[in-house]
Length: 232
Length: 220
Image (cartoon, rainbow over all chains, first blue to last red; front, side):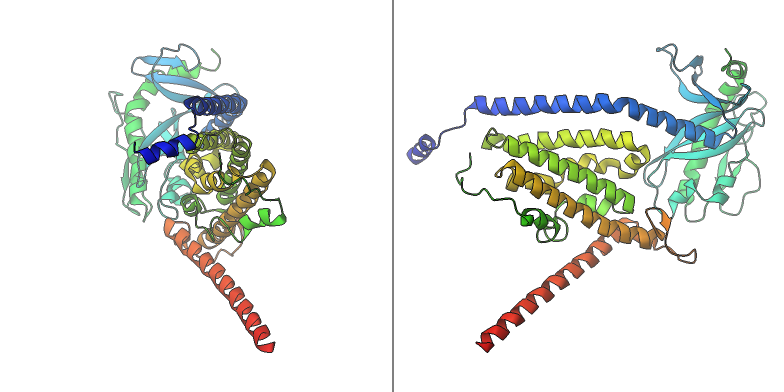
């Protein structure tokens, strides 16, 4: 420090470190308090919103749902989602009609689309062994092109009864679900893509096939437990 | 802390109006353009983003102004950022509570209000030097100015890009939407057009003023 600077420092009173600590500490505490208050206040409302969003999506992909029950399903077995905390598995939503009969199962699936990961909820009917509907939960596809997967009526018609029968050994799908070029759909397990949104359409086909190959055999295996789910 | 104690200004209508027109954060100062361009693809998003920013701006300006004598110069930016981040987090929760669809549509841009330079700029250049009343009025003006600017972009982009405003159909079904308006380039086009309009109005006003001065000078 030169002598001139020393004089300067002497003339301008230095801020004591204590003042800095006091201000930063005080502001940080105030900040923490406000954030916790806001979190506590909004938490139940946000959870309620999420629950309603899931219920809406489930009733969108499975027609005629009255109530639903959440399960965790994996190769180890089927567990109620609100029961054993240590149980691991993929979350599935069993949907029941007015008389407690199993209307279908809603599952989540995800795959990379054109921009980002696309997440969907789709319905599976155990009686026809087919997909009964899809609902996009999250996507960032190009507006006007890729985002048509969410509302294009011709595309969504693919999923009204998409064939997903199991093979003889009940270990996977008889026919892999594939997305085909626009206008060349021949079979019930094929998805007719949207022209101009090929990558997004293919992502949907890929994620349903991947999730179905893994989950549908497990669902059929635990079908009895799922059927009594609501009553039991 | 300030060496210039005599900068306090009295609260006038101008304190409020400055943010709307003369110093409009978007159209004049060109600040905070990231959310301006990114989330104005629909009117609803523009309104939500504008109001969220308005709230954070007013709340943080108030607190900064209240604490202005206690904040040492060396740690002022850090303090401002903590204050701004607090209110942004609160807004983040509140928007999730209001509507998850809206929250998903706005994406990361709610959290990014923290680094919106309009807010930090107000805290540094105004709120930290002024009394609470003036700081609040000025922040409300700036926030409203920012919201109006977002609306200007949002309505035009939604109208041309989807043929709707707030989801209501405006044009007939024969209208082919200009999809590019909803995409990022549309944001630049519309912002450019608005800036052109504002600059034209400003120049015309100045020329009129000059002409009037010239006339009086010749007349005398």
